[in-house]
Length: 459
Image (tube, rainbow, N blue to C red; front, top):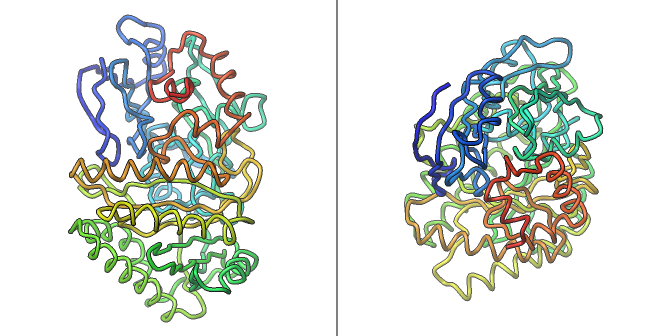
């Protein structure tokens, strides 16, 4: 097992870490040593994958950073499941499965999250087919080493399963995950135009959700224009034609290269122009394929390698589907307009992501534990200008306050600058249950990071 001292940042590069020691275990026995040797490996122990988080949940100052990158293996699928190491990234597993004409039910836009985080952090994407849009639903088994240094295995349906899948590394060091797999499926993508300011928006919104399976929307909040990309599994096995394959290739890369284009100039008029051009691009998809476009979404997860210098900064909140068009969205557009009026220097920069999530009860802290929800996610490119990123964080905190007021639920890895009071407002009794359960499995706070300690102490 290699150990050293080093500094690193989260995926976006915004938050830096300087742990007391940086450990790179290779075996389960190494994990046991790390947990049991409290002198060499001081608390808190924080497991690291790709660092694919835009919040401070994987920041490690002092304590021990435990890199899981050596747990990098994939077993051959057996039946309708596949097992892989916690250090495998989602895009790697999708590529492996695609070679066998298989896929995961959960197919996110960005594929850099590692399976250790997928197993316990309630990652999300638009619902489609059997996927509710919360990754927890496809997790079958988790192997981990607990706070006492014991090897453990837990499976879906076990007594504490919904706690483990919400644990964010606070239950132990996860080293292997088993997931559901399905045959690789063709998806038909179509596009629906709408505008949040129009009188017929609610009707168009509800019709879109009622008549389609997957719904992923992008909104220009400065104009209210929305394009919903609807997704259905194709009932027939028909390969995409040449034109569809060309657009599929462009589609897979557009999001990646949109970031440096949008972030080229930190000027508000420029950001508004790029948003309009981006919405026009999605309109091109709509006019080119009026009957929908066939694609393999399992091939879509993007690899933002560490060498790629541009990053998105996401901010996640999800609201009740029923209240979204008539209460939440109008209130948010008013909130954003007033926020920008008071701060003329500020612009949200990117498009807002609006996608449907369905009820997911396989994780206690699932954003959709009780009801279907629609997200409203501000997105912007990361800039090295610390003042601009501080302005962005200030906006995100203000948005947190708005979201709690309107019944929003968050995630801990992609909702930024959360306070304990905001988390309590979002999750209520479930948060109290989780805190008590965490204390019972780790009474010495071996895994309690400073990030979660702060949230649990409501500071």
